[in-house]
Amino acid sequence: MSKLSQELLLDLEDFISEKYIDISNLQFQKARPFGKNASLDQILKEQAETFRDKLFSMIKAKGLDEVEIYKKAGMSRQVFSNIRSDPQYHPKKNTIFALAVGMNLSIDETADLLDAAGYSFTRTSKTDLIVQYFMFQKEYDIDSINEALVKYQLETL
Image (cartoon, rainbow, N blue to C red):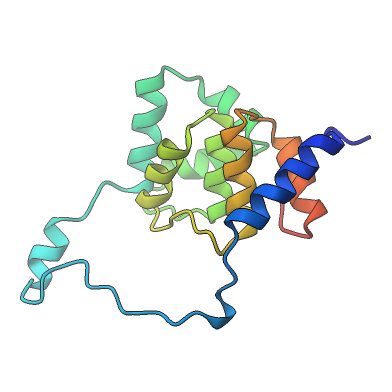
């Protein structure tokens, strides 16, 4: 039984059509985030907090319950425990999306969490656009999001 209404699916289709960028014909320029003369020591001093630190500081700041988060994210206790206990844990992007859904994060908050793990939202990913769409709609049901991802033959969260 589908949780997604036909109206929502049509709205999602419009959203993806409007926002999606096909990268197959794009040319890229190399980015230089640091000055031309920046030393490696200077660059490493500017390193931001780790994904794990960012995640748990957000949980604490929002006063959220960890068990509720990983359950709402459709995540096992073991995976969440790995994140908590391993300071160098590097999640998949979809894991971050699932946690963001579990925490009801805004798009900006999710972008911050993605950045802490070295990712960002991109208009060249339908998965990113689908997650953003549901966040815009303030719809934080992991099953509905996964249903939309399956409809587009994408990996679920």
